[in-house]
Figure (cartoon, rainbow, N blue to C red):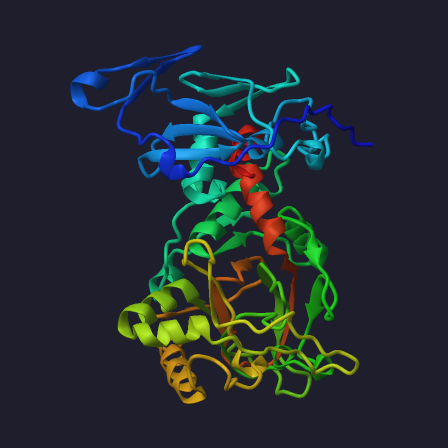
Length: 444
C-alpha cells in the first residue's frame, strides 16, 4: 500500500508574474553549498546586489539556467512532486510512494542550496530533495526528457545498394544470454530500419519463435500470434496469396500498428500439380525506407508532404467473418511527432484505406494528387531494395518506418514470423544499449 507524507500547508499568496523576476545576465561558477560569481561586475552592468541563481518566491523558486537566457519559475508543487529520493519513489519499481494531492498547492521551499551538480531543497516539513541541473534544464527546454534525443542513432536511410551488404547479426550471437547480440540487433534495426539474423535454424519454426522472443513478447492479433503459413485465402488477406504486393506497412487498421515484423522463409518448393524438376521462381522481398521516401517527397513536393501529414484517413480490416477492425480515430499517411514535428510513423496500405474525407483543409482531389506523387516515389528504382529471402536468414524490420512488398511467385512458400509491439521493441533496445541509471535519469 502506498503511504502518504505529512506535508505542511502554507499561506496562499499570488504567484509572481515572470516579468517581475530579475533577468539573467551572468555566468555561474558554482561549488557545493555556495554560489560564486566570475567577473560578473566586470562583464555586465546593472546587476542587482544580492542577485542569486535561485530565489525562493511565492509558490516556488525562480532559477537562472541557460534555457532561453531568462529567469524561470518552477512551481513548488512540481518540484516536490518530482523528488526522486528513496522515501518518495520506490527504487525497484520507480513508482511514487505518496499521494501527489497531499502536497499543499501553495508549497514553497524553506531553503535552497545551489552547487555545481544541482539544486538541494529543504521543505517546510524538513524533507530534503535534490535535482541535477541537467534534469531541470531538460524539462524547461523540452517539457519532457527522452533517452532517444541524445543517444538515439540517427536513422540512416537506405536504397537499393544496401542489398549488397545489409545489416545483419548471427543467430548464435543473438541467443547469447549476455544480451550483447540483442543489443547489436536492436540497434541495427533502430538505425537502418531492418536487419537480418543469419544462420538461423529452419528445420523447426520454434527456433525462429525463440529468436524473436529474445527481442520481446510476440503480439497476438486476429491472425494469431507466431505465424507459420503457406498461401491460403482462408485468411482473407492478399498477403496469404502468391500475387505481387506493392510497398506497404502492415496493420494500418490498428490504433497502434505493429512495431516490428519478421519473415523467415522456411522452404520454397514446387506446387504439387507442376511438372517434376520445375523450380519455383519469384517471391523476392521488397523493402522501401519510408523515411527516405518521405524525405524525397518533402524536397520535391512540399505541399504533397503537408497534405499527407495533415489529411486524416479511415483505415480498416474487414476481410474475415466476424472481424471489423478500425483505429480509434482517423490517421494520416505521414504521422508527425506532436512536439518536434519530426516524422514518426508511416501508415500506408492503399488496400486497407477507407474513403478520402471531404471535411478537411484540403480537397480529395488534392489528396489524390499528393498520394499519386507518394506512390510514384515508392515505385522508383532508386527507392526500392529487392532481396531474395532464403532459409536460415530471418528478416526483421521496423513496421513504422520500412514498407515491404514482394514479387509474384510460383510454387509453395512456407514462411513463419511474428509481430512485436513498438513499445516493447524500444524498451528492449534501450535496456540492452544503455545502463539503467542513464535510463532512469531521462525516462520521466
